[in-house]
Image 1 (tube, rainbow, N blue to C red):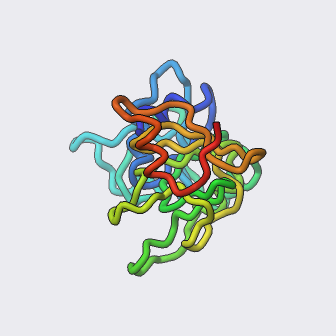
Image 2: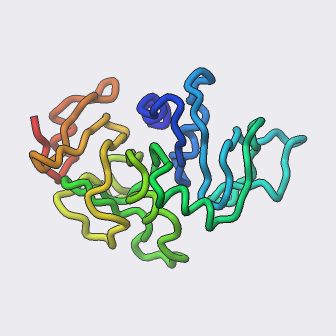
Length: 204
């Protein structure tokens, strides 16, 4: 999933990676893509995860994981970081999700039955990034579809998701038709499996 999402990123773009599966996208970005990774806690030019010798406890991403800074990278306060997001300077955001609706609504901050600290920066990224890619399993642990007609969990943002990458395939949110358009299926997956696993509308 992370590898497929990486191939969707715009070359030379500023990209924000959310916590969870999206952080793995960094492992699949080719050097010649010239992508600059952004972290909303105040880092532009984020590098890969450090080796034991490179660990600096003061250099972390938004998920509180230690990271590195590439040559030419910069750190700054979160106020400036969010000004970048809200000003439309982030070309793509790759976010995890609990649910995506057929209109492109995103629910990704509240885990049912668990205490959460709050919505964090996801709301700003979902509305401020030029392109939003949701990366998630197609079904939850109970086997319920996460590509839904309408989100039942609290929304992060409305009509913001452009593409969805799941373990079953790559889908585009077609706002004109109101549904999910299957662009690619994962190896060995059939369209019948996708239909059975998707409660939201699939469009041809």
